[in-house]
Length: 290
Image (cartoon, rainbow, N blue to C red; front, side, top):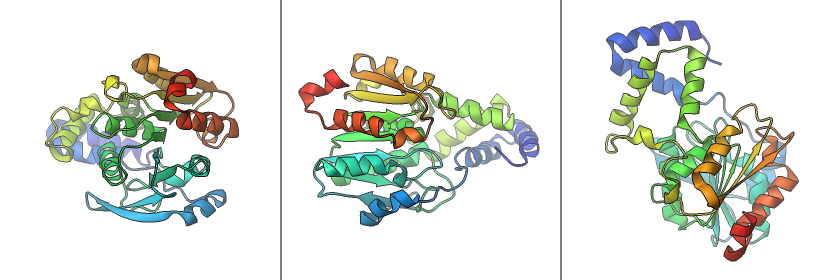
């Protein structure tokens, strides 16, 4: 996963002992860099061409945004790691057909946005900006890392009437464990990276690191939740969505699929139909179906 991992491991583990500041900064830059930049698929191009594209400036990076519809009943679509907004085409098309106004973005380092890296704090800033522009969302649809990032924003002032997550990351620790295993680095390096985030990335928010987990303070969301996760997901264990379902209690329902994996779940007609039905149901029916 990481080229030259043995050399990086040795250098990071050593520098964390003698130069924790640079070690934390270097580790962070590795941690937040996507593994490649996804391209638009042929079946996604038509809808993408029909979007009204816009731009946000987030921490010196140009973020491309997409909007469809007349602006009423906005629904935010949040893509996952090493992905792009167009991967949520099936939901944008279905919601647009029902009179909703999908809104999406390519995170920094993803899709058509600039930069070589992105992080959960930048996702939050983008979602905040879109919330300020379009108002409260009728719904938020998120995939994978996007679930973690969207719930972080939704616990921090952004409002939605309902939430749907696919193959969602619930625990920030899962990402850290994968990063540590991929490089074989010491826990000391992770502590240096945490210090870098709290002192340099979000200096005005002490303890922000502890608030990244999507299962924290679930009551702040205050909206019904529908989760989908494939039992054979080889990227994010289904236990992550079970964690989220437990955290949100009676407001959440988990649907476990079979044979769709981490990516095909986003385009499966039955999954899309069930999700859109939940998203568009009248409020009195939503809890019964979700």
